[in-house]
Image: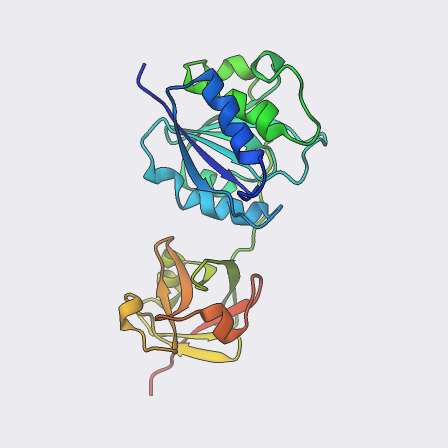
Length: 266
């Protein structure tokens, strides 16, 4: 069997032992697997942010990759542990909506509730399922254990009810859903939805106290220190500043609103 790839996405940071413990469990069971750190800097307990980051990175990996995701504010509660099969990838993590955006993009082949303790560590902590449940399940999966061996299929897995753009009085209303390390303000307005709304017209975008006109093709088209709108690599409308930080300049945060209208002819 060819070596497997397991990615790790968590909100654990790198200061503590948590990530290393998960890796140790995996490598003890499968020393030949390749471990890739997707990120461990998710804002603590922010499931929506984790879902966004996962959805914009999982498909860059080879088919068959196992994505192990642990952002789990409900650890120790009755929330379930799951394995999702989608688009020739595997996703292991808590049943709290982490995989919602993946499900928007891929056909779901099945979801398994992880209920068979023989694939867990012998002692399961109430506060560290990443080490005691998810890591060993991912490792066993990488060794060729069939998904159905981990538990029974389920249909009622948790889905996030994230904000969707709405139309009101000839305006498209959205909001900022993610701010990346460069300060780019990524909104929930998708490229296709924006194109359908403006229908070849020129958009006028109101964000914070600023009004932006038109969509730039890339960062290089922007003027230094001037906010601009463009479609980012995630496929969503974003507000950016060439060589600068749009979040700091505009003093905006996640959840702040954005309004798009179509410029009328003069």
